[in-house]
Image 1 (tube, rainbow, N blue to C red):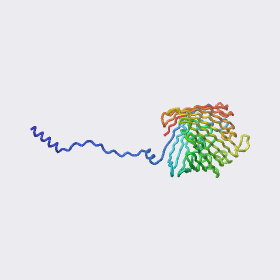
Image 2: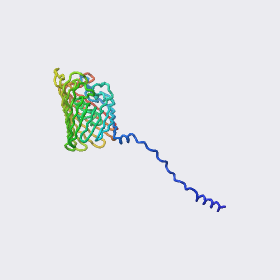
Image 3: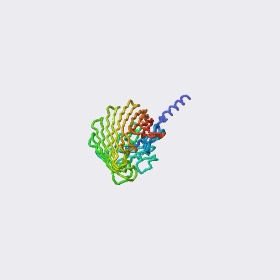
Amino acid sequence: MFKNKLLYTLILSAFSVPAMADTPAPAAPVAPTLSAILDASGISVTGDLDFSYSSLSGTGQFQGTTTNNRVFDYAHNSFTMQALDLTVAKQPAEGYGGLVETTLGKDASTIASSGTNMANQTYDLTQAFVQYAAGSWTTIAGKFITQAGQEYIKSSANTNFSRSILFGYAIPFTHTGFRSTYKISDAVSLMGGVNNGWDEANDLHPNKNVELGVMLNPTKSIVLNLMDHYGTEQVAFGTLGTQGKRNLLDVVATYAVTDNLNFALNYDGGSQANSTLANGLAGTAKWSGVAAYANYQINDLWRLSVRGETFNDTDGYRTGVVQKWKEATLTVGYAPNKNVELRGEVRKDTSDKASFAYNDGIARKAQSSLGLEAIYKF
């Protein structure tokens, strides 16, 4: 009996199929992510979310006018959704491309071009242009931000929370037209363009403005940009009426002492013909100003930015007050990671005139402020 069972077992073993090792089922194909598709196509999608709290000792306006005495942070005591900035771009080194940038939030009402409901606007098509690049030439056509000044509409591109006086009162925000840049060498580039003028998506007159510039980079640490804007403008912004020639000379110089320390200097000088001057007569109104910056990266997390500037509104054309206006700003930045930065800022504004409005109805020569800002970049 035992032998028969043993023989039976041996026969079965000889003819049995060996057990197959478990093999995993073939993996299902993985669909490419949107990010991977965009990267492969050369399209970038980026954005900023800018949220703040501002506390001003004054009302945020100049006495006797409706002009805000700060660019974006003019709320007297308020939390503000400043902006959601979204940019979609494809800008190859050769061939056709384009860029579209939108601004959602309170900042849109400040930068909106003429012809829109600027006071209540919470959306702005900040940039929208097509681009063609070939060799040393790059040309864009559409709506685009100005090349004048040291600061930008997008908050994360700046080192301070509040914008400078020059950014808000000496220069334009955007232009609509075309602009070409020619790179002569790594050290020299030329720029020229024709547009509707200052912040005009649709021109209110047939005359166009011309912008000319030269960008110099003589050494690794020094950059010098010179710009001039010249053309006919409406004397009253966004209102069809008296016109006159407007000119702006803008100079920006930056110097990087080390990777952690840099300085910048910005000069602006402008004029508007056929304006009403302080004496009540018609003439050419003038304004000028200088802003100086010092930026120091303490470590990977912390940085400091100091700004001081003076602005001379000789005829009250830009602010509504004939005044010499000065400000000093200290900003501390903390970046726990590459996508987030928290900023704290103190600022002091002074004028040679009692131009700052206060809630008690008594105008003063000074205004102080505290600002807190949170930026998320994606």
